Length: 228
Image 1 (cartoon, rainbow, N blue to C red):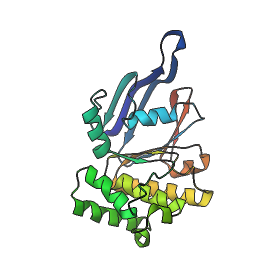
Image 2 (image 1 turned 45 degrees about the vertical axis):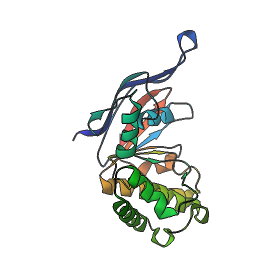
Image 3 (image 1 turned 30 degrees about the vertical axis):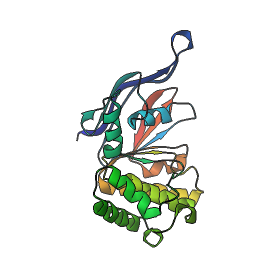
């Protein structure tokens, strides 16, 4: 099976000369459609830097990144923007919902930005929110939702345009244990159902059993620790 995302010898260095600091060193990673991967490691190990490069938010110092079969054109801002909108879904530690739009509107807007018609985006948003147990709250504003509910909306937003790759950075860190477990389960289930490749960065070792593959980052180097 071909990889949905592929990193080849990706490196990231800040500064130059004696002041340079290597944050990533020769990272190679392949994740296929339908795989749910978790990336562990202490603060400062390079986890978020790697996720930001995969998400086309940072340009690596070296190496190559391929998303959905296409090499990422770092340095071409317009094409990078299109990749982020069309090929990637993001879930962050805090849901970062637009406060002036209700739950369904927050989800549908991402679909429209990715090229769906307004009607298609609204229908897809309603479908996802129902799957995530949020149908009754779809017209509520973000300020009326609990933290767990906001993260469910964030999952729907990440999946609304059916991206082949979903990235999540500490998606349960702001939640209590029970709600964090529920959100993690829903995130894995929904991305698998959509056939998307999922990469999640977390500090929480208790989430590991939910994933197919486990990676660890230490001092900028990546190693695979096991498969589910």
